[in-house]
Image (cartoon, rainbow, N blue to C red):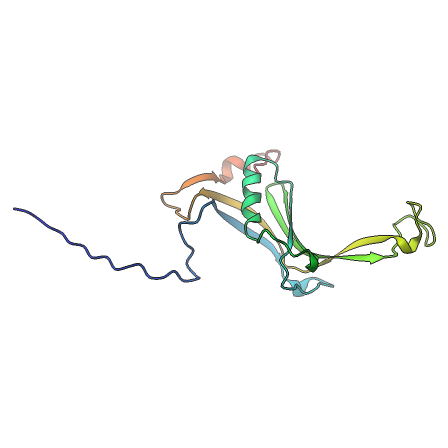
Length: 178
């Protein structure tokens, strides 16, 4: 007696933009987002252009922090358009990542604080000084990483690189992981 099983599997459907592919290299991370302020709620906000922003990754010093910083940096193309003068800042402080989007503007002829209108602290004339100013474009928000998986999105069988354990890791306010 022999048993033969023939299984016909149809080809998989083409991926849609809503479903993430599961074979991408690199980690998968899950963040809690909080303190969201939309651009229309920010006073004197600017409008974002289509330029690719520069990135500032600040205070990602631990092993996990460097991994998370590279993960967040990979969300943007690596060839910023400096002509647009836009910058996105990821600032890590006390395991929270604060995200801000700004445009920097150069202003000529501004005197530094603490000097009079006609004098300059560096010895140059007032009209030759150039200062930088920031204009927030928004949105601004805070991120708290809950877990990071090695490889693709597989929460059931995937290998967790890091998992936030509330009871153990939040018992002291002096220890930070990112």
